Image 1 (tube, rainbow, N blue to C red):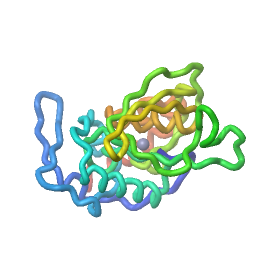
Image 2: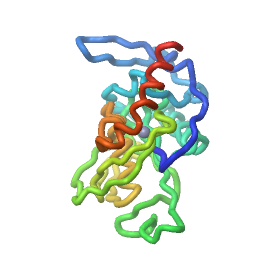
Image 3: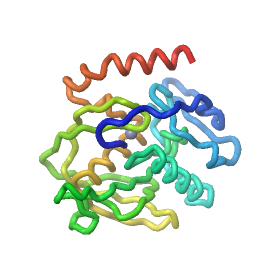
Amino acid sequence: MVVGYRSGGNRHPSFLTHLVSTTTGSETRYHSPMPIDPDNLAIVYYPNPILRTRCEPVPEVTDEVRAVSRRMIEIMRQAPGIGLAAPQVGLPWRLFVCHVFQDPDDKNSSPDADPPSATTEPIVYINPVLSDPISPVERENEGCLSLPDITGEIARARSITIEALDPEGKPFRQTATGLLARCWQHEVDHLDGVLILDRMSHLSRLRVRSAVRRMERAEGVR
Ligand code: ZN
């Protein structure tokens, strides 16, 4: 996830080269036939089909999962973004990373508040599950590293709770509010193949329509 406007980065043409896919009915699953080289991971862009895949739980937190998480944090930092989900680097795993910096100009942005709305460091969430969304929803502009130059107004729960495994495989539970809660909801959407395009207000969708079509056309000619 990114906040507000950012200019587009370089597209990575060799997406999915390290995965094979099998299709059953309307569902496509991706498998990795060989160990993943974290150095080869890069952001994949809409309309890459992996962004529409429902990701599978990580069966075991291995050294490979930890190496991928570290690389994802690096990619997120370089992008730059505040959240990055595994399908955004071509992996159909239920895993995301986030680092929501404290905004010095926003008195509601704090990693130390209860519940927090920012983080002091990058955090890895493996097999995350959200619960207890607190209304009312808040509407804010969101962007996505897989949809460069596209932002739209999205309604999200103000606060929410997450349960996940950390990089040691230990379960943890947190509640967040504000931008951190928004980031979790955005990233867990990715694990279900849901993009900001699906959640935008009608007006935002109209505004980005031609940019979305350009991305779809560019994919077609590549
Ligand atoms: Zn995103």
